[in-house]
Length: 164
Image 1 (cartoon, rainbow, N blue to C red):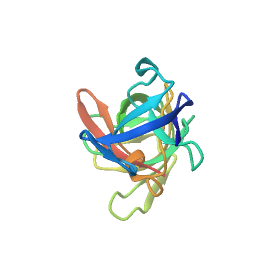
Image 2: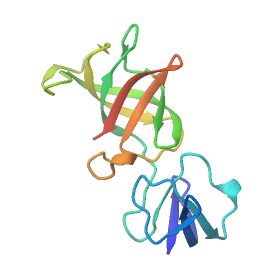
Image 3: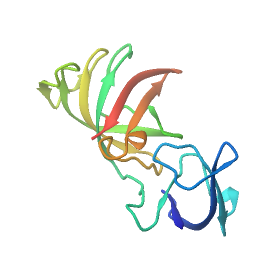
């Protein structure tokens, strides 16, 4: 099998897949596994890279993505231009809130305001986020482990979200 490591686009042939030093026939999305691969140096693979089948829906880096974000604990709230660190799968990448499409009730999902200037603690929003470095995310509906994230700032988790 040939895998692609995204977002770098590095291809390699897999000799074996292991979890806890035991060989696996199949790895599922979200499994933390080790690979024995041909033709790629360990130095070429970085934290946050996603391995996927090169022939069946290969993972790709996102230029920007739409997400539903629930603000848990932010002292002043935030608006467009806010650039916290997103922890998504094993990646830790700064992402900018380039647009906040709407503010919504976090329980019912009912839209409260279109294009708000700011969202505060206890609220939810739909926003467009732009990673500052290459980042692989997928829709939460398709690949849940690659579609959920935590928003970290001030040494704490200020929000959580899912990719739409």
